[in-house]
Length: 110
Image (cartoon, rainbow, N blue to C red; front, side, top):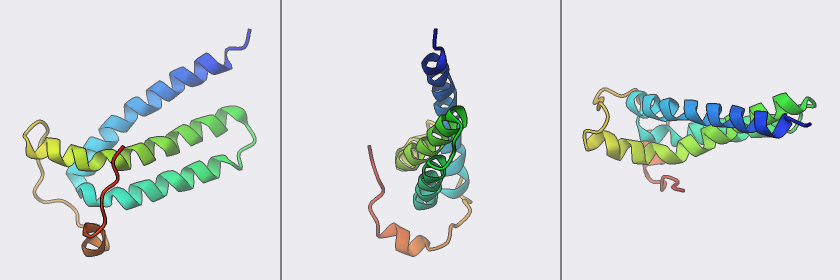
């Protein structure tokens, strides 16, 4: 029997589960305007997975990258949830570089 698929599915589920706190903490600390940095990091991680020969490591790294890309699309929704009071709101967020330029861009949404 080949257990690779089921084990990759379980690992994917766990990694995506860790993505939720990443989005919550990222929005609370930096605000939703950090989405381009999170998306760029995710794309770089996915590209790095293309050069990994080991199947296990390749899949895990790619899923981590995809989780970062997904997280970048969730930051705006998380900001709305924090404003509604569903999550703690932090008014003293760390200002990310190029904030004024990023404000002009439309935040991604899935």
